[in-house]
Length: 424
Image 1 (cartoon, rainbow, N blue to C red):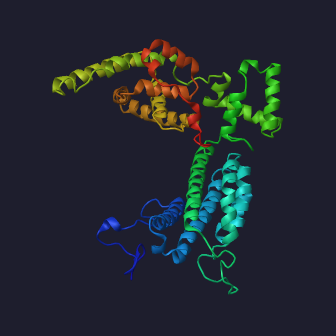
Image 2 (cartoon, helix red, strand yellow):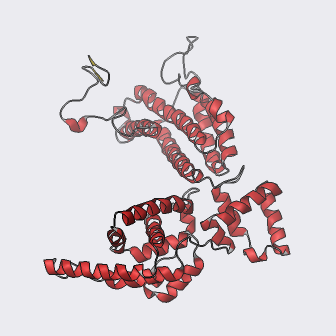
Image 3 (tube, one colour):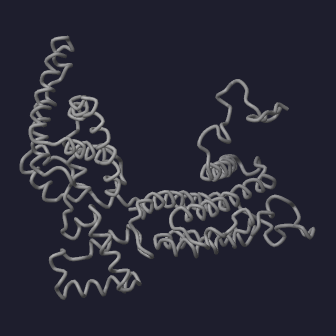
């Protein structure tokens, strides 16, 4: 055996040629609980597929049932432990911190704790828990603590599975495919909700998604002094089981959020630019974007001409747009260039980074280069327009749509894409 401070290899567990068959484990990659879960799922599925695809008399069903069922059961145990760990990264609580995952293999105990805490954490877990419940109960009934399919007898030397003498592998395969789909959905939900909650837009019992749904149900802000608002407020409090204090906290978060405030008719203005600045920027970008070096032979003369055109349009931009304004334009591009979900909460940190970049460029006398980098983006207009939609800049978007016919072909932003879970 080779052992040092960093590596432990022996004749059984080590790498060798052909390296295509070397599995990456430990810190050699990005393995986590989900990888372990998927490994046990894949192993069980492959064994079940092998059984299903050969004549029954050729299968070793009476022996292979044990590793198959163990993999199924262990994938569920890991799933529940991973889900509890995910809850800790969504909302902090004493109960979640104090629960020792390593102290139990009892599926029933894990399920009861996870189910209670997940549904306290976010109401969206209720639906998937309802679907999972039957499969968890079935596995718990046969193998509560992970011993049934590992050993022939229990700690009291009593034989396992005496009361369950037959297990149909084709039925087990069908049920496990359904269970593995639910495990995958739960993993997706955990990742989505961790991401959503990291934006800190939630109250004691309301998620960001709840706030979005509430904002959709509220009337325009200008109607809030009417009886209509009072009726809707009462319905919301009843529907979400919240009091007046939490309702007020929810309203404050909605009004302060770029995306959510737009749903109630409030447009939170940008800091350094107006709609006219964006229009001016687009008007310089459009003719500049039409000069293509490839079409002009990529010659030295073409390069010189390109640089001259770039300088001309940058100077025209600088006539009306401040340095900080360019930072905000660049931030809009970065926000709109991302993939869903795109959170408006991220805009402030992007803006601060862009401000630092352009202010450094100004000190180093390379502002033109910094501006030119973005001016050369082939999707600059549509990407910034997308960001403006995400930030709820409705008036600005309408203004730009009237100014630039190119924007009429842009698909409307579907804000519900920012909420990948629950699954549509």
